[in-house]
Image (cartoon, rainbow over all chains, first blue to last red; front, side, top):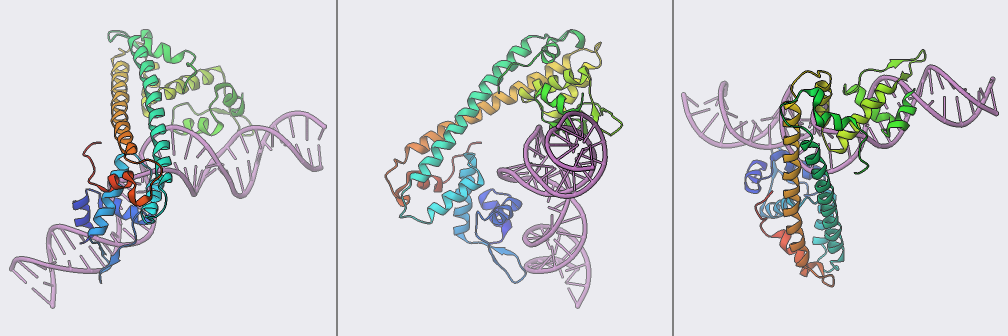
Length: 135
Length: 135
DNA sequence: GCTTGACTCTATAGTTAATATAGAGTTTAA
DNA sequence: TTAAACTCTATATTAACTATAGAGTCAAGC
């Protein structure tokens, strides 16, 4: 199967597949006589694995690590667990940040009703004031 | 005041200030005989405004628009309100996404306890299965 | 055999908002 | 006068793609 079909089957764009190859997330594909990349079912599996990881916001280096672990089935999987724990922490921290941000934005938004001039605009006035200390 | 002092006063790095100038968020600074940028209090105010906006995750183009509006005090401030509403929507959408993601990650994490081999690892097994359809 | 269209190839640039660097010039204090 | 501290411009890096240019390959139809 050529790259276009792999793209259709997996839902990854052609460029993304080539990008993953360059980043060594998938092995360099075999080539046809005309230098076209050729793939098999194993490539589909691996690409779907990567896609699933990406849908969970795992980074490419993290995925590379998971793929490496996948290749040594006898090893302990502590590393996998640690990675997931760290990742979950990051996601939760980001949710907290955004929640705080959201409160600030809503407060700011309440400081102006539509029918005012820029001069009277509470939003712009508040933005000009000294910033609140927070991330 | 030279760029180093402006940096200290505002808490923006020197490179960031130069970056904002290149992106036309602040006017090109006057120059000294030796070609050093020179700033006054107005520059401090404007930079703090920008910093405040950035702390609310407003993009540089959004900030540019706010600064432009700030310069026409007689205009209606509907545009400001619309921008804030859109921005709040985006932040809330992102919070929703991350919340869903967090649930998925936690579920995945529960599928493996530490003391297993990679081969038995529930996390890796689940990642290899067909991905759930969700952003 | 030739052309057309769909596909693929590589290499490069763009996206965001900075951050970091190299190599040069300026200013200030000792 | 010389060294330190500062500033200048221009360029590269970050993440994970996405988009483009310009060239090559392949299958079908005439």
